[in-house]
Length: 242
Image 1 (spheres, rainbow, N blue to C red):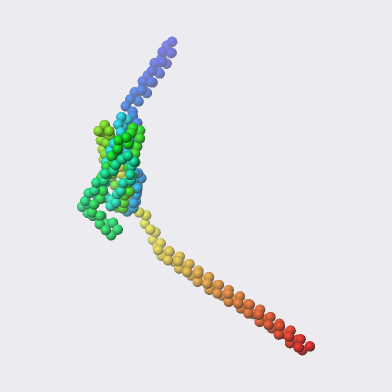
Image 2: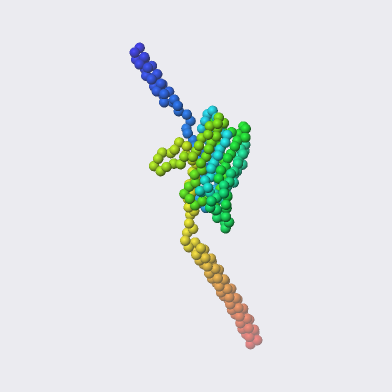
């Protein structure tokens, strides 16, 4: 009897401990991110801002993404997102950007996506908002600070920048890392020129060889014809003599 009571007490204590550990534990935290996470300086890229819904009692109804003018991008265009309206804000640049021998004096500084009724990002879902951007500036990274607004009025500010040697902040901003374009191997042009020269030389050699071969065949035919005429003349002279 005591053994059964002790066993039952142990199970109850274990169940209580498990329940205690489960208190306050919700779904895993997700962040607003930009994908891909890395692109090339000076190039163009399709960027997708991925926005997950972290609430179980509200839907995401608006997303705002800031493009800093300190790392301005000359051309930014939005891709239509069904059920959402994109509003683009532009800002005059203190220092114009030079793109293809022309100056760009204004750049997109903020994009706001707003959901039409019935198209909100519901609990357990996520949405991606795509843009085409370029040429990307020659910097190490671009920080896109974002605001996420829920249907209950809550605004989550994804604006914190991670610091070296510290833990990731609670609400990190989406960051796009930029790498330098791969340098063209030295001597590539010379190699192409040399290759073309080699091909030209080979063509010349083939032409000369063909000419000599044709001349040899012609000489052989001429020799055989001479031999035939010689034999015919010899036969005729022999017949006349007899």
